[in-house]
Image (cartoon, rainbow, N blue to C red; front, side):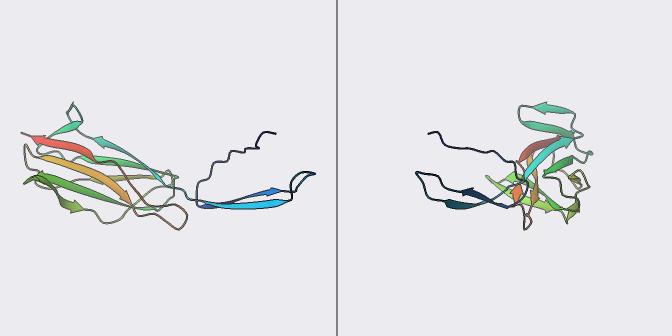
Length: 148
């Protein structure tokens, strides 16, 4: 006999229950599994003038914008934006935003303002701290540099 399989897509923490009523060879059985769901944090940097390998280039006076799409989309989810600058051989946090709420499509926008140091490497990402139904997730670090 071949095993019975079933596929299901879940968008929040879910308990899946499989029930087998038994037959002439096997006794009835029930199995339960808790399925944990992690969010997807999609990111896109905007307002750069060029890309150099994996680094976005910005003019000094431009404030980079990071567009975030949280999946599953939850209106009102709290996104935090983090910026870091590389110096003395390590990454150092230069800014963390207050809560920016997602819209009904799960979108949020973070704009990185300030005195940007020309020639230094920065990285930015979005951070989502999760909910009772979906586990926390951070976006990928996206790298950028400023020029005159």
